[in-house]
Every structure is written in C-alpha cells, then in structure tokens.
Image (cartoon, rainbow, N blue to C red; front, side, top):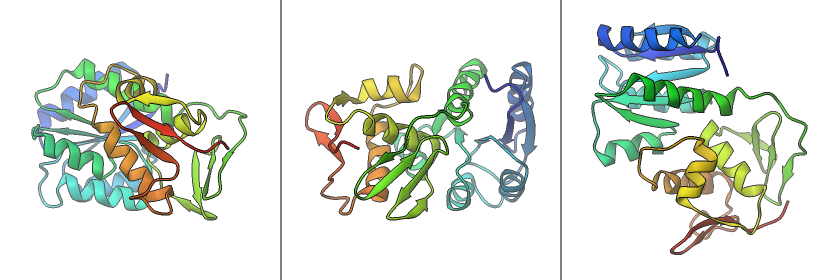
Length: 230
C-alpha cells in the first residue's frame, strides 16, 4: 500500500540518503532529500510530505529540535534513523513524538518494512465508523482527530491508533506485547516500554489528572486497559 506516498529523507551523509532513496523508490515512493535541520523543516511543512525519516546528528539545527518543531506544527509521522542507539536516546525520540526509532547500521529492508507499517496507519482509507465520544474527549475516526474539551489536539499517528484501539475495547486488558502487535502492526524490534511512553503522552492529552488516570488504566503486572465505555 501507499505507493506514491512522499517521503522526506533527512541525513547529512550522501551515502545514507542514496541508499534509503533507492530502496524507497523501488517500492514506488516519491522521495525528497534534506541535508540539514532547516531544510528538513521547510520541506516537511510545505512539501506535502507523508512521512519523515530523520537523522539526529545534523549540522545546525539537530534532529531533536527538528522533531520538536514538527510535533508543534504537524502530525506528519517521523521515523528517527540514528547512530545513537542508547536506550535513553530511543526513549527521548519517542517522548518527542517520533513514531519509530531505528539505529545505524540498519537493514534497508527493515526500514522499508517500518515505513510501510507507519503509512498503512496514516494513509488508510477513511471508514464509516462512528466517533468514539467520552466525557472529556472524543475521537473522530474518519478524520483521525482527537478533540479534548471541544478543542482539536495534535496527536501523532501512533498515539492516535493506540488510543483508538483501546477505547474501542473498554474493559479489556492487553499486555504491552499484544499492543505492539496490534497497533504497531509488525514484529517490533524495540523495547516493550515503548508502549509506556505512548500511554504517558496520551494521558497528558486526555486525562483530567494524568497522574491519576481515569481512562488509560495500568493493570499492574499485565499491561493496560481503557476503563470507560463510549
């Protein structure tokens, strides 16, 4: 799916850009390139981009700042591609709203697989399901919009899908591994605590008191459940 989607590859290494571009073009994607943070922001915000593959170590404005600026202005999905493979870096990327994090050296085929998984979620056809409406917020599923207290709130694709999945199944308990399988949509190679990061970010958006969650409830020793029926 999603052949023809426009992907922005941001990296200051020509070899990496060329490698990623060739593999993506082989799958039918339209590929743009940027070599620094300022160029990346301009193209991501004005170029009709469907997904950004973002290196962290960039000249000038680094990838962290680019990701932060993108999240403040756009819901375009972001896959971080970085030589920094420490757990703290992966968690920081997810905390900033990245949809995935892949470390260098990487398998181009695995990167393509992750690109396809993200685009399946963000570019899938609209459906006719009803909205999910709760006391504090609602989910407009066809428009993929989160509305909290009457105001649209930016919600990256992965967070939206996780919330929609749980909210449509109130009372059911899911392990982190089940959520990775169901929401991430492929065999995830990272840490299951990725789910914890996304749940925490969602609580900050929808919970009246994030530290005392009313909707996204932790089931200790198991995983998470959504507590209120729509």
